[in-house]
Amino acid sequence: RAGALGPRCREAALSVAWDWVMSSAATSSLDLDTYIASYSGYTRLKRLQSIARYEPALRTQALQMAVDLAKQGINTSLYLELCAAHGCPVLRDEAWVEAMDKKASATLEKLEAELTSHKTSLIKESIRLGHNELGDFHRSRGDFAAALKCYVRARDYCTTSKHTISMCLNVIQVSIHMGNYAHVSNYVSKVEAMPDISDPVLFAQLRVAAGLMALDAKKYRAAARHFVDVSVDLGNSFSEVCSLADVALYGGLCALAAFDRAELSAKIVSNTAFRSMIELYPEVRELVNDFYSSRYASCLDYLGKLKPHLLVDIHLWPHVSQLYANIRSKALVQYFSPYVSVDMRRMATAFNVEVVELEKELAALIMAGAIPARIDSQSKILYARHADQRHATFENALAMGETYMRNTKALLLRINLLRADFAVKGTGDTFGPSKSSRQDRQDGRNIGYAGGGL
Image 1 (spheres, rainbow, N blue to C red):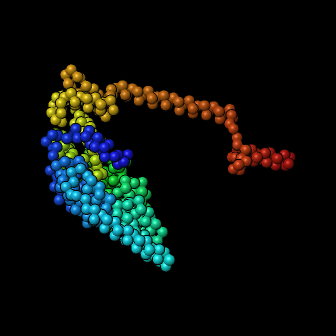
Image 2 (tube, rainbow, N blue to C red):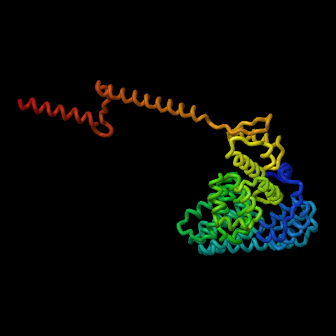
């Protein structure tokens, strides 16, 4: 799994991915203050850490912000990790770490004692709150495995649907932080199976979780459908996972990579709800408009500008190369589809690429069956390969004739068998007497009655 790669493996993967980026976009123009304001909790710190690791121009500022935010909480392990990062301008505060660890140890003992007391009193609501408070504590410390256990244990003490939904959302968020999307799938299904789900905010949160789950599994079509269903009602309610702008970004890229033109028109271009979401990310809006309007040079230019931002996204970075390859392949297929022949030199100009590189891409698509065409390398012309309609008609006629002959022979065989009385009659032992055996018995009775009368 890409999410399990170590820092060195991730750096190697990103060095390959950076080959896609135009030289003019090498330095990111990301506004950290505006970017990070959309997030909260652990996600905010991890995004700053990711930016510091892979954006040298923003490393110092990102680490400074991350360390300051970490000192507002009690996650000392993440604080130490940030201070140990290359280029961190802040010295490690050993006194603060020791004080926080002592305070956290005392808080843990207190919460465990309170939970034990609640279990003795056998009050379900108090026990549920005790497990939740203990889970929240471990979560704030960055111990997500322990937090997950506490939240799951609270399930047995949930007395209302509201309690169950709260428990499921806690498990979903912690599982996303852990990268355990199997738990995400299970608990999203649990909430969706509840009969009284009508809250639009809750529905939006579940769609985001399901979309991230599909994205992690590289099911880009399913991910796009989930993200497109998210409404602006989400607001900042899921800021510990992602923002509305992230939903627009993930949904737009996955849709371009997986949807056909009709689905792109129905679910993105003509979808007023998602169009309002895309307005939060102008680059994605222009990207979708250019792709749908067949302005491929401008579309690929926007992709190049977006790439530095995508490579530091904690959910999207493992999929950037595949998504870009899918979008580019779809653009090539869509460009050629209305033509009988295309001059590859003009096509290369439209895609801002050399003719030799374009020829290699087209050859790969032809071998994969994505484009029914052939390449004239001498004259640099791409010719569509259309099926011979005359030949196909004759083949269909012959197949229909063979089917008719086979059915006719089977019918004649059945008629001849019935005429010769060559049929197997069932005994009727299992399901009662068969129709033929009942008829034979009836004929025998009639003969017997006639003989007695004589």
